[in-house]
Amino acid sequence: MASITASGIGSGLDISGIVSQLVSAERAPTENRLNSKESLIQARLSAFGSLKSALTNFQSSLSTLKNPESFTKRGATVSDPTVFSATTTSSAAPGTYSVKVEQLAASHKIASQAYTDSDTSVGSGELNFTVNGESFSVAIEEGADSLAEIRDAVNSASDNSGVSASIINDQDGAHLVFSATKTGVENAINIAVTNGASGDLSQLVYDTSLGVQVSSMVEKAEALDSIVNVDGFTQTSANTKIDGMIEGVTLDLKKALPGESFSLKVQVDTKSVKSAIEGFVNNYNTLMTTINDLTAYDPEAKTAGLLQGDSATRSVANQLRREMGTITSGLDSELDSLAELGITTGDKNKLEIDTTQFAEVMNSDFDKLSGVFSSESGYAVRLDSLIGNITASGGILSNRTDGLNSQVKRISEQREALDARIVGIEARYQAQFSALDSLLGQLNSTGDFLTQQLANLPGTVFKNGK
Image (cartoon, rainbow, N blue to C red; front, side, top):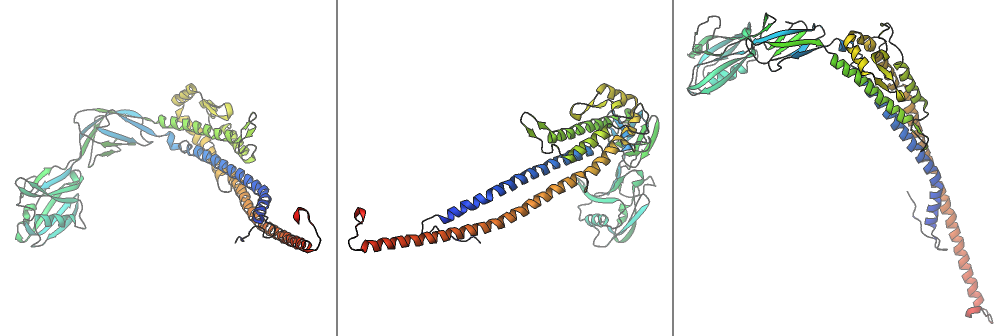
């Protein structure tokens, strides 16, 4: 707790102000030195953070190139994407195909006769639904056999295998509608009925195998399979996906246009690889810009980057340059380096692309690019491993920042020691000036006493009437 002090009583000196100024003068040199040192350390920590961020961003750009599957991907182009789309795997053979979407899969829908309203009783008993070979039964109790209650019983059945019930109100009344939850001929709805004691539940019977109407139930939507023709070959599907008709290709059907042909072109996906290589170059150059800025020295302004002369940063830059200049082992000598792709090192260690040479390699030797980047000694694999080691806990950057953080901690400890020392100095000054104030007070008192005594002596004359 700070003590309460006052100006000198005996001398009139501003002891508090004098002590405060002397203490500030004692603190300032050390405090300014510590503040300046910490400010520089914090700036360098921030600089290492920028370097690590640039390294991580560059590492991210390697993810596509270090994956061998990136170089075997196939792309699909459809002449009218509103009719169908296509996705491919690496097993898809490049080629052009003629595709006709003759029919889209549809779900089965059947409806009852018209009843007065949804509260109208139909009849008690048991409904047995069969969809694609799977059956489930719904018991309809007497007194709980209205259209609405039958609907709810079907929808809440725990073993419901694919039937949705609803009520549609038409001009002639309310209809109980059963819809298959899946498309395709195999998912058509069949209903068998066991009548109970009341009503006529058999009005809900429906049997697709008979081909004739056996009750008042009416088919509102036929169960259909999708039908696709590819180069004169036909395949059906219970849904709107055609998988494997063309090996490695999945067709997603959107619209049926019987008799109309649309083209599907499957080709090697060179575009994504080209984009990944260009991203590799751009991100490496961004990394080099960061390193150059952090280590630069301006002789005119006589200013240096925050990491200028730092051994860790210099080591990182050297390791990156060394990897860029190392060829990929085990490959055709005509294409085992970045230079042979048209990628060379230019000013300030940045990469440059000869677009003409790069395009020629993409067109004529695309199948060899995987080895250059994603093989065991490929550029992307080696650089990813290198950056992982540099940025890992215990790596060169981690050790460097740990050292700087230790210096910050020591500065905090030095501040605490300074505070303790200043408390002692302040107490000493306070005691010294308080003693001085007391002494001056005593001297003033003695002087006043002597003056008074001398003035009382007979015949004593002082100048100015004293």
